[in-house]
Image (cartoon, rainbow over all chains, first blue to last red; front, side, top):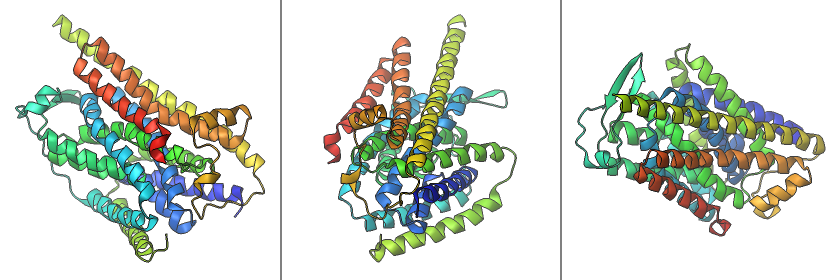
Length: 278
Length: 131
């Protein structure tokens, strides 16, 4: 395949990945990696390197809007970034020594898990009980504006959330994805943050987390300009358009269809990994 | 009441600058990637794309120094990689900015937290870790 044709196919694929990733909340990275490896036969190391770059682009782009609106809790974000960046660097280093087949299997499992998470109905766990001593010490309790009103919230179980973020960061560094599904679990279910705050803060953290592992990948030669270029341009364009459509449309049905597609991709990744074909 | 308002305004200002910084970083670095990409495609028109096997030894721009050298020779792939590097440094610049804004607010706990994050990133910048 010529460079021009390859670039065009990846560009279109990345655009669709970014569009669907933002409409369903799964993120672009989890779709572009199976696309590159399964459909185009790209080595998973290159696919991961390109994906992590697109994660930085989309998360920084959308974080810009949320930060301006004042929904993002910058203190929670920065506090938990300690855990995610340590995890990301460790994950990226471990990835060198790990057989690509194992990476594919782990990737498939996370893909299935993320698909299930987007379909699950969210339960509000927010609390006003601001007695957690860690939350007080790190000044994590806060408030956010919604429909002209200021809503306060309190944070619980900070060590639990921190530990989960360490895990989320490791997977992000290992697989080249944002691991938004895990971050949201840590913040919604464990730390009891409101959805709006957890999703925007998770987005805010993704950029730094991905940057930490991207540096390791860059030095290892995993970020190839020929793949990274169409992937990050395509995913960012798709995600930007997706976030504009998202405000106007209901995406429930799309989520189900998409989850099925993702599970199908995941099974293929796992199968290829188990049969040693990655 | 006066001080509360002042603090709110201060926080809002910081959020506004943070948001602008992130957006500008993404737009500038992606423009560089796009320009580099076009040059790369023009120069590599007839070449066959081969990414079937991971060959780190063939990677020309696997360090910050080699990227800067490549950009000076005006190679498309080097310019793309330079844009990628700028994109990587966008969220890092955001941490540096947040660190200074916490310093102005005299929130030293969060100055320390910012420094810890920067230290982790500096460790990962040390290419030796990757090999």
